[in-house]
Length: 232
Image 1 (cartoon, rainbow, N blue to C red):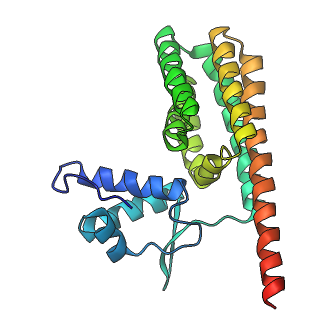
Image 2 (image 1 turned 60 degrees about the horizontal axis):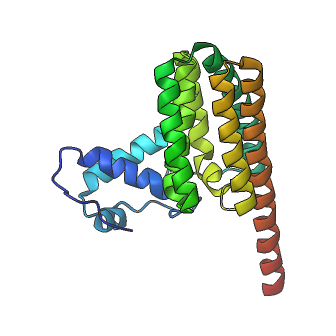
């Protein structure tokens, strides 16, 4: 893991939080792994104080579990948890898209178009890390355009639980291409101010990701079972 530059920066705590968050979302800290404060501090070239603060914030966001006598553990959801969470997010994003289509301003549409252009450039480079960060900004901007603070807070809270899985869902080239096409459809629906179409696209987009993730997790579980069978 690369060290954070300028360790004495006043933005050190925020930079540490964002770096740890990326490590969790991108799977560089695997689900179920313990977050060792000393090792993380050495790796990121910071003291343990910003590490502790970042871990507390990550726990509040739902990316980390604080377990008595075990410490901070990267959240590990069951298959049932994953399905339920994606189903909730599908409804939240559908409602968010519907409201956004009714309320979005020309300025926000222009911002979304610019982000879409950047995201497509990341896709062309197959830069998944950059692509995902831009993708997340687009989803959050659509959510903000809905102009419903309660919905926005709820979306952020629930979505944090499955961010790492949403990131992994684009590692399949065919599925990634499909997701890119769906993002263009979202932008078209917003430009047309079509709330019914936008709700449908957003919900289907999330359900497609859910299906990819469920297939991935089931495949991984089957592989692990095969390994255990061979060992025994």
